[in-house]
Length: 78
Image (cartoon, rainbow, N blue to C red; front, side, top):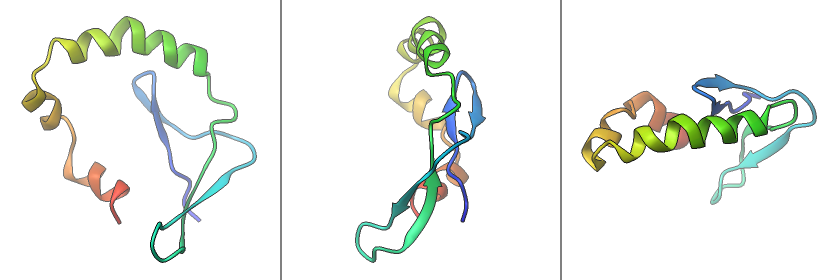
């Protein structure tokens, strides 16, 4: 099964450790596995405060939407 990655500190990362299965809300089919074990959440928080928040606040809604590529949405919406 595919492991779902998290975008933390400016990079796609996958956790290591016990994963949790994510199921389709309607069909109940297993879609992905996800875990945050092994990810540096304190660093992710610092990155979000120091870099991410300021960068997003400087952008318009249209600019923010332009950075999401269609392939990224297809990962979320199978």
